[in-house]
Image 1 (cartoon, rainbow, N blue to C red):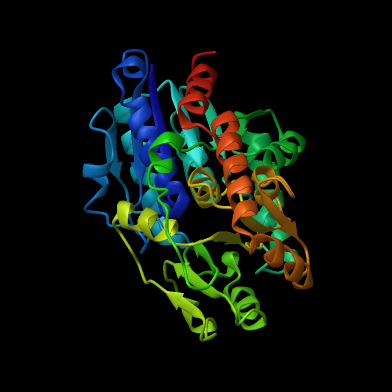
Image 2: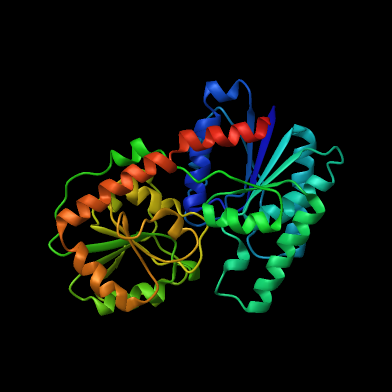
Length: 358
């Protein structure tokens, strides 16, 4: 069986997802039954495109096609044309599209295959959940998702429980949660000591990650240190003196070493799919404080692995509770257990392989 994955948004957690997917499906056990090709765009600033081929398994085929995040009539036409050419060469049995842009371009390319294949689509966070765009634009995005699903059919594979609930109302759906290499990542958790409680995040500094709110929280709690692991176009919104921005770190091990230095992981996204960074923090036994939104609430168990909040004043109590080292340890242990139970990539990618083979 030949399976082709198409992704434009190869950055951040999606990059981690695909690197792990390549290692799982490039393993001899699965490769004997499924030949995997990943068609991707390497435009995102937070990745080193020169490292992709060395970090992804040699057991999968990699094809780079230029795709852009924003709407561009000329570039989108060119990208779709190149997708059609590659798909006709490969002649796959299964086409799996990832994120909104690939979901549109890939479905158009699928139409021109003429011989219909099994079609799957994973939103990784529906674009109509964004809060940095107008209600009218959100409605347009929702209609696009509904119309494309109605026209092209296929199965939506949701990456988290809340996304599955939404997807089920749009069309035929299945749930395969995002997963991580829990055991490998947990090895980076080592004893450390901070003079001040340190609260951190791994993310690109974009509207989705709400940097102005991160800054507001840091100003409210000057007694703590804050760490933003990453960089981005909205870094000018972060001005609080107790926040450190690391800048882009393209070495995966160094990112995890930085993550180990924090005491509390904080995810204050405005919208999400199922955030890989939160899973990684929990695998490293960090308690998580997160906004109570789709994605975050599918991972964090309130008062067990961390806290979910709706308003900034709730943080007064939650941070106070987490000043206690023993509480952080307990929450961290609970988080690791939850990752092993629900978010282990080996289990979840096997579920994905079974879906392809049905």
